[in-house]
Image (cartoon, rainbow, N blue to C red; front, side, top):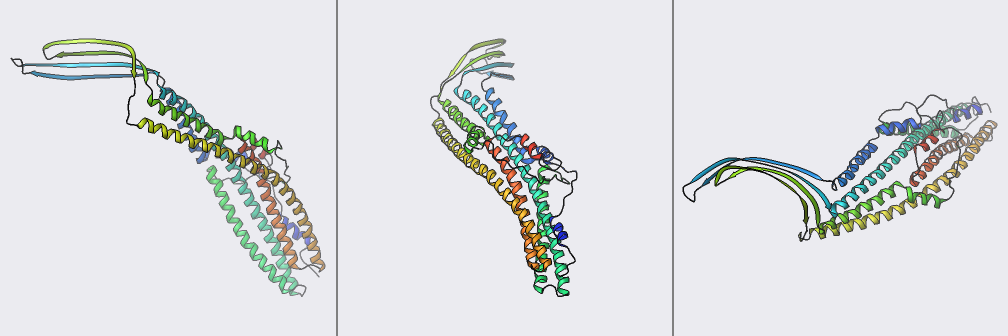
Length: 441
């Protein structure tokens, strides 16, 4: 049997080759996302706004100074006793007053609550930064996987096209059956459709990256072929969970939300308590009276304490306390739920790392076996013991194995990063380590 396409050339067309060019790497994309991601920008603005709650709480413990002034034109008419009498004059006054809270239970609680809100805001922006870091890596890897999928689709299409031409020529000379031709034609048409789908998916993934960084990267650095595989360190799931219970930003934020709720209860309970303030004032008055046109001018200086005792407010204070206590119960339940969720996420992420490593190793072995199987099938096809359908099936198996391996490699790396995020230990240094795995990184 004579063939015009040697099996080695067909195998090379399927496997393809990659050239190294200058490309933007993972850290480049991450830094662009830091500057342009709108989700992070919203979180940072919310953080700055919540920081002011701390300043507002402090302000309730500091003195307040007020100044008031007035001037009136006064015209008085006296009818009795006779004779009638009129008097007109100008009345001037001003008052400068300082009030320093000495005891206000609500203000003390508001101060503590403001600090808790600021701490909660810090934890929430940490969540947003970590989420942005994960989204940067996920979006970057989505593009790389879409590029891999398109490259595999194109190389498979090229190989199937070569097999189709070979089947047609062999059929013309009587060395192949019509089944081989029809099967190759069907596989080629399917490969064309898969290439179109892969190209569309790549455009979508690139658009998602463009939205994230507000620019369109021309080329991304790709993953090196030799990926080092490592188990989680420490290799103990409970150690990871213990770290997460202490450092996970979701737990930290919810703990501070509980503190905010506690102080809200105390703030509303303060409505039952008396308040005591130090008051100092300086006043000036200038006016006359109805009985005389003489102008009186005097100043007044006062220093003292002012006590106010709430007696009854229509039940509003009690209602607000009950509402705040219910909100506190809700916050505590949410904290317990968050702790349970984090424990589950730690277990899932830990198993994803160990399982992902095993999957990559298995697919690497499967890829090597699929390559050998394809080589053997091509040799068998040249020898007449294998059909064109067998070759197409081997090509398809190799393509799927390569695609699954690429996906497993990205998933493995992401699971490592996600485990650290859930544990609350993820940092930019982890992205730097990932970046070293990229060509040119």
